[in-house]
Image (cartoon, rainbow, N blue to C red; front, side, top):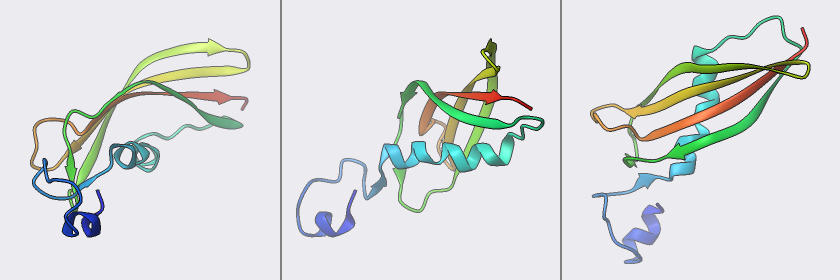
Amino acid sequence: MDPRRRRAGEGREPFGGPIAHGYLTLSLLVPLFAQVLVVSDTAMGVNYGLNRVRFPSPVPVGSRVRLTATLKDVEQVTGGLQLTFSAVIGREGSEKPACIAEPVHRYHGG
């Protein structure tokens, strides 16, 4: 949400103040995954997509977030492996997750 538009009287504050857009929160999956997942002996990794995404709670501007990820499934695909994860982005001070997603990655060669 844009704080300037809010100050100008456009829109309301249903969340008590400005929040990060859900897709901004979702975009944090890539850098957060880089901190928890290391894949070696592969020629190429591809973000294949998402099976599902939900935003159960807002992320107020300035919040600290964290990622919890679990390997859900591994499948053989032509030339490599497809890994499906269960990923939860949580917000410090909140028991309810900010984002729940199932990212799918493919790794080829190596």
